[in-house]
Amino acid sequence: MRRSSGDLPAGDLLARLAGLPAPGTRCAPGAAGGTGGEEEDALALRGDHDLNPDLYDPSVPLRDAAVLVPIVDRPAEPTVLLTRRSAHLPDHPGQISFPGGGIDPGDADAEAAALREAREEVGLVPERVTLVGRLDTYLIRTGFSVVPVVGLLHPPFELQAEAGEVDEIFEVPLAFFLDPANRELHSRVFRGAERFFYAYPFGDYYIWGATAGMLSNLCEVLRQVDRLKS
Image (cartoon, rainbow, N blue to C red; front, side, top):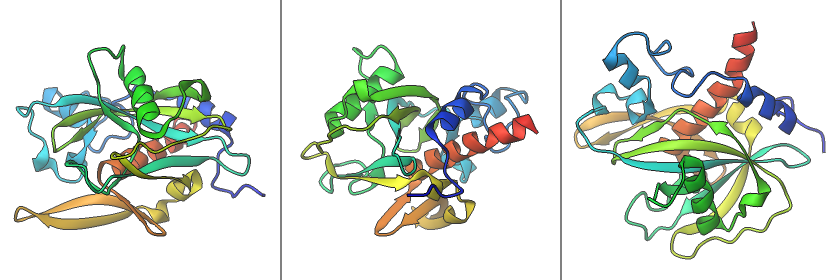
């Protein structure tokens, strides 16, 4: 099968991510490397406040969390592995997400937490994952500070959704997210205020919220290498 023009071979993907600046300085709206003082440094963090600045409240305690952003090295083209959360979960039921969760005291770091959660939620063994790096920390209005850890997955591997947490595991071509035409700006009224968010509708899947925000940051990261070299 021929690769489409928007695809990145795995080697190129690794090279692009390895050559980027540190997290927190990657295309954050309104930020230029955190040089504008404490308030600007805080807003340089990505999150739901990217499109809704009033959602950022530094007084709100946040729980540290991590997710694995799994890019699968398929022979035809790289794909992004995603899950549909169980409809019975109390937080974000039925939404599309990355494998992940809270960082536990026993986790050495965000990478260890992301790999542990991926194993628990979808049965992914760490031996099939090459950790590439981190995206920008993403703040979620429900009280989480999430570190997105990018991992390159090497087939073959067997996955098994954890009953009660994950209803479905699926993959989307990375090229789909890299095409700017597929990122849409949507809004909903929440508690009397209009809230904006990114969305990537893909077939029967509606990818939005924090997951879409992190995917948007991933695409910005992959494109930023070209800008840095120009």
